[in-house]
Image (tube, rainbow over all chains, first blue to last red; front, side, top):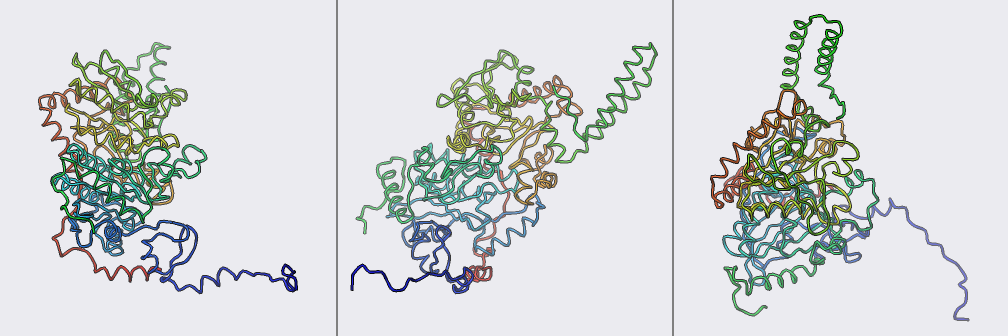
Length: 300
Length: 340
């Protein structure tokens, strides 16, 4: 029998209809990757820190997951979790703002779109704010602005670094001009932090846009971004509609902004903790502005 | 200047036309119609008052965008002397959508910064419809730092639909340019007066708008998003722009009530476009009054007041710890699976 002979029968692969495939996957237990459409079990996603092992797509993390990723176990002490937005303008949209707030509080278990606190990484104390996109698209209203300002002031007061993990659809329209003015408030607080030569590290995640991009997200002394995150001031659709231009390949992604010189590094999530640790070490160890030094013990 | 008449201005322009016709009729035929004219003029004034005191938010937005409305440089030439315009951001380009330079206000030096719209198509191409690129913001900051070093107060005129949403603008980081201005304007040791004279278009306006005082002209607006943009996002339909304008509370009187702005500068009846000189005179009066008050303060006071002003903008409630509206985290999973 010849080794390279023709098989007697040729086989034809038939695709099972797409609908059949869907039915086989239990809803809520397996999640599809938005990047490559692979399915993974919920627990697997957690294990992968929400990064697809097949295509590297970074899914959004909740604030709590993010804090676990970036802090020493048990070191995080939350502040200002008791701030709640109010419908100051009595905004009449399709749904009322008050209803939206209630829905989102119930959905996320958070009181607003950012979680702030003081924590440590490798023993280095720092202030951290993490935006959670699940809460009204992490839009910035009075509460987000106030919490960013307060955590910045805490960092300035204590003489410690500040880290903010950004994700946001922009200003919260429901609060009108109050939301726009949060851009000023947060930037002002950062000016006082910077004046003391204290490091401010921004980690941009998908998506970071509009009012947040045009304020504290762009003011880091070091700026990192997760791969393939959408980062920009105006949304791609607005740009397309206004200018009728064809947008370049990969426009407004982390990689694009690395090339254009805005951000320092594109850092995959798996390396984030390591890189943040290094940056905190470099910017604090010999910095005379830092009031709280890491205890001098060897890293585990 | 174009002959644009907005819908709600029609009764006024009709009356104006009648007065003019009557006038020319009397001139031609040598008839005395002064009585009729004075009746009509009186009626005209009344109609104007009626129309302009009952404008909807959306109509005010139209007025703020009126193509005949005075722009930054129209005011500059009427209020100041010896204006010397300075150009360029020293990094990439000159952006004509933002103008700036030294000038004298009753003999005293000031620094002027302002967004500038164009009056016709050619002019608007040059001015990019008053929509700055990053270079405009960087130039503005450079000039403000120059003013700071020279101990000269800064007056910022705001009239822009917003920062330009374009590829080049993003490639050169307009978000970062605005952010740096927002931060660094808090460093300035000189008085800063921010005045919205027409359109206060979101971050693009705020990017030159961190002041010790924020003033707004009567028919100007200041908003986090354009009514059209808001309608497109919330209602998925731009036809709801009027409703969005109402909801956003963007008019001068609403903003004063909400304490976002410190003062509303009155305009001539019918709006600044009816009488540039009068509008400029009213604006000048407000500028002088506010600058006089600010100039007596020390650098430290000015910085601290500016910081505290913005630090206190925002409305929220602070519930007591531990009795928050937080549901137990277990609910989250439930909600999620229910949704899915």
